[in-house]
Image (cartoon, rainbow, N blue to C red):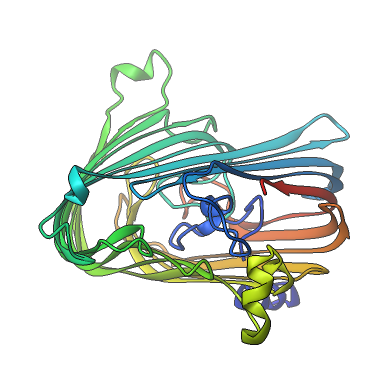
Length: 437
């Protein structure tokens, strides 16, 4: 292993959520969408719209090309006794001397509403991502440029709405679409899925959302349109990938306890069956699947001073700490559907923010293996990457810092078709942060 590899794996082990993630950790819950709602340093009045955001400019290198970079983030939220709404957008761009560059954006919104006296919980979670894919992206999306939209709905029927917790039955429909812009990728993929679940669900205000699935069953269907010329379209065949999953575990249990701690727990175990119809024929396989993950944010407080500082809106004097971890094995497939895959992942993230400085890191290792494909089983594809961010607080909301991100993975849509390569990005930035009081 090279010194570069050793340094990268050590960075993964330290691991945290930066404003603009350049390395994907899709199995770890994302607490950043709650940045405006739950800053964990002050008391807010109920039913108040809150805003947080940042703007950054800087310079650095992207794949050995010098250039300039800019980024912006915006989080908006509103919370009341029966409604929680949050939105977050992150956009970043790079421009090099020769005029080439990259752009990347991710926008996510969630809404949870308690209706009919708490007997019914309705939820919606939507995500739009565009531009260059971050490193270690899910295998079914692949590298390169693309536009991806996904929406997950939820209707949760509570059997004991007057209790702080009780049993519930949930229906979770999903829909999504990806349009690839890279020439070696398919044209589009349309996804549709449905999950049925039963288990205990919280009715406490400190547990705004989530459910413990005693059992859940999920069916997903993906239809992939190949990228073809008008002549080749005559013989082209659409690929169909079907996935059936059963399991049990914690479904996005969200905690906001005493305005001191925020967390999301997503952990489940089960089995998955995959089947694909492609131009090469039909193939199928099955595998054990799991996801053990959580993300936590809390203030390291001094009990003797916390109460007075908090009431005065000065709890930010205490360090803010973040931790995220995920160990997962998930069913995957190549973007064109010709390979059925298993993806083992280890993801780690962590951060420390004080009044003077902040340091954050995130990273992951992915072991991709083929379950079934058009050729004999290829060697394991090992991918890994990390991102480090550090900054010094200047004052008045301004910060000066630097970041470094690097990923080692294949550059082609087929994770086994081409050699792996390093993609490195680094720079220095000046950033301004602000939020509503």
